[in-house]
Image (cartoon, rainbow, N blue to C red; front, side):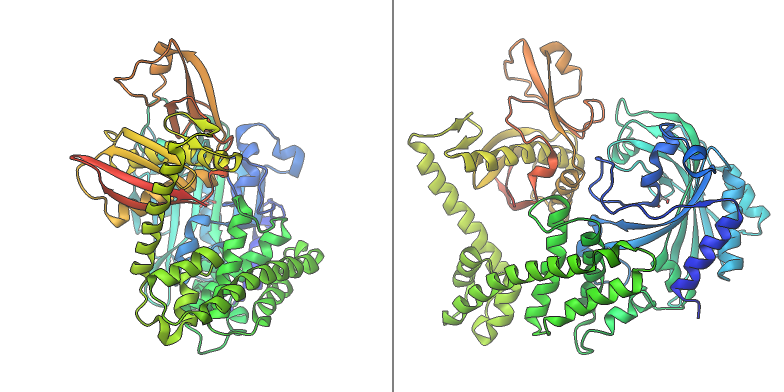
Length: 587
Ligand code: SER
């Protein structure tokens, strides 16, 4: 069987032979402020496409190859099935003004069919749109190589980038192989970086006004192949978790444990070790929050299933042992990884233990008493359900969440009573805060409100606009024109969108300008409202042009969308004819 080690070696040797400089993986914490964590191999090379840096000078070659540590936050909740991971390794070759389509495709073909010995099922090419022509050249090369199943796809599938708010991008061609279950799996994405896009990927696809594609200073090649998927195909494994990258981790877990949980622990363990080694520490925001979430999820399972507390440490130790030859930082940070994990474990265990002690005192665990345990002791629903045994037989997640909503409502009313009196340090009409602490929260909720409005427009249509907004330290409340209940999918999509923007670390800034000029920026405003001659346009993004959200607004806002935290829609309800109301929180 071809091991993951063999594949790594073959890849490096093959591309070295073709004149590529082999470059070590960069950190999972990128220099690039437009992304939270490294998501692709090309990220460390962005500046060689834009002309800001010179590959000849830095690598003595116009082409490089790397095996890059990557992390995709968008997939966290999907982990547990057969195909999703948070951390993964991206194998890729790059050219900056060196070779272009023909060699790039030929290298990939040779590597897959000859070096690894796989059969290509089919390839895809760009069908042409958005002012970019159909990729006839790639089709010709594939035909010459004897690949006859060539499928045309659109901008959503075979056009890559940009990452973050702007950057290099271009059409791509993808290689598909069939796995042992008979499913076609995308193996390799070969991107022809030809353009610099002035906006985000979504803006490009939607053809947002002002978003342009300009020819790149140094066009080139950016290819990416997930090592885990390649191993799955090369090793005839049924899924990613049955490859040699995961079997040593899965083997540490009790056989009887649910397969989904085993995969989550294996994935999160790998990601935890890698993130800590790159300097991430658990916290309540940004990358630190991601790490905390991964660790605590694994810990909840550990408690739920009474696993030995040593298991997670064994998983970490095995990750370190198996990967340290490729990522030496794992060795130098070994004790730090263990310490950080232990400290978080102790902290979370205390929370859980205190909660569980209280739980033992409760005779009957209905929604109300369970919610109280959550509220006072931070005990998650899953733990209450599990540890409660027969006392929690009647407890359902729906009732628990309903209790949560009721609670929000009560605290909102309390808040309104409180705010009816005096002593507010901030009262803009829309935003109200009684203390510095509350001020900090309402400011985050205010930025979240802007992002929410934009996400609603993207999801439900551009005719959506704000009809009312009210923000207290407990929640935001946003009214908008829409004539039916939102579906669960729409609500999830909106939440996800807002959280993506917050994870993109977009600067939140404003420009002051004359009213008439401000109206031409595309910023949202109330048509009926009388504005002063000069207004502030608040926007989330590197520039007003590339911003994901812009609105006439007096502030205050956080300085970066990352500070919004995790955004959560608590309730969506009717509030009059053709008007819907959303309540949402940030944590
Ligand atoms: N950047 C492209 C991707 O991430 C190819 O490497 O798929």
